[in-house]
Amino acid sequence: MQIVHSSRRGARDIEHIGSAHDEAQLAVLKSVARQRLAAGQGELDLGLDDSPDAGGPLEITGSRMGHLWDALCCGYNGLGFGEATGGDEVFRQLVLARIIEPTSKQDSLRVLEEAGIDAVSYPTVNRRLPVYAKAEWRQRLAGACATHAGLGPGSLVLYDVSTLYFETDTGDGFREPGFSKERRLEPQITIGLLTDAGGFPLMVEAFEGNKAETLTMLPTIRSFMDAHQLPDVTVVADAGMISAANQKAIEEAGLSFILGARISDVPYVVAEWRREHPGQDIPDGHVFCQPWPAGSADRRRDQVIYYQYKTDRARRSLRGIDEQIAKAEKAVAGKTAVKRNRFVQLAGATKTVNRSLEAKARALAGLKGYVTNLAACPDGTPVTAEFVIGAYHRLFQIEKSFRMSKHDLAARPIYHHKRESIEAHLTIVFAALAVSKWIEDHTGWSIKKFVRTARRYRTVTIRVHDHTLTAADPLPDDLRHALKTIRTSPGAH
Image (cartoon, rainbow, N blue to C red):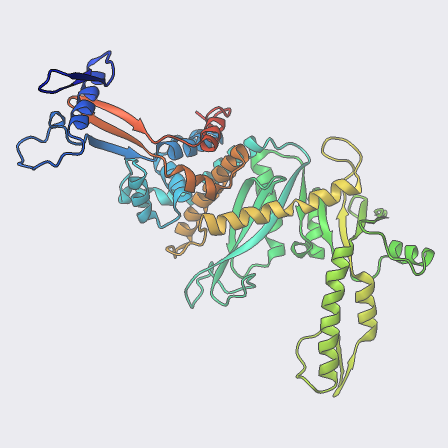
């Protein structure tokens, strides 16, 4: 295909447009040539010819977020969700739409339309939601997640809880006022999340908003183990999740654990070290080991408590103690009102500063305890303080997952009021969290960055005469590499 420019003097200039090997390529070259001829010229629209032969723009018949949608589908299939759900297209669309833009179920259809996906109808969504609320459906998803995580006997699992509040004044038995980490008074529900050591979600459970956190852990873990025939897992949880009764129940269930230990008094091994090293500060990072063997009447395994001292932790604690003591002294002197302050001691109308409690608090500054009943690490090697403390510090991964579910996936069920619809919503958020973590693990990008970047690059279909062509925005190198990593991952198709 060529354009020949000529003048009255007989001079000719030939511009080569390209070569065609079939009818579709020829039609494209003709359109390019006509647009090149009309470039820079004003045209009077007489409404006589709207065909591509007239040199006008080609008609775009379709546009979709092809790169983003295909990548999310790879994550969905890579986790085995397609097989676990029996190829349920409604569920897949709701899960992936939530990753692209978290919004209501009805508005998710608008998100899908903008992505260029043929969305299901809203009545179909409403008809399927009760299915997603069933425990059996969630167990199938949890099974796929457990298979992906490669859990085996003794594998580390992290557990933590959070709360989701509702903008209503009255409870209904499920949404109830309770202890809120956000210090809110509205009715709420309690969410228990179980993840692997890397923060990959394994199971989510919803409980009444007024149910104590310590009563949520064991039912969730037992349900997960029973569903996946795991004889033992190693539970990692924060000290706030564990009561004495809860720890006893974990022991009776035969579970291994790594837990944060509350330190109510100066441990013997710490006091002994200070007696042997008078006037010396404990070295930064020093770990004290205190075995706690089981007695003949105890129904538990031998335990070991590790106490780690950190200089930075001590500095922060001592600064807080100094501030509280200063407030306590002002309250005792009558300069300020008596508020909640553990260092103010009341005996009738007499107020004093509790100096013995202050001394104990200063002696404990910088110490943190970790208790475990592990006889060996999951790989069979001996248990070390480094392993126990390192496993406990992995709890930041589950906190990261909670932040992702609350902020990036907008987990709070604003538009739901009945328990069935709330459970269905949490199932969708759980699956979206798993796909998001899969994308993050394979690309090294945050899900927010990946969605924000990939959604800008669309694929379009163009009609030229009787032919349909596909075109796409050029991709930057970093996104092209991330997409290639996703496409070549096992099980992604």
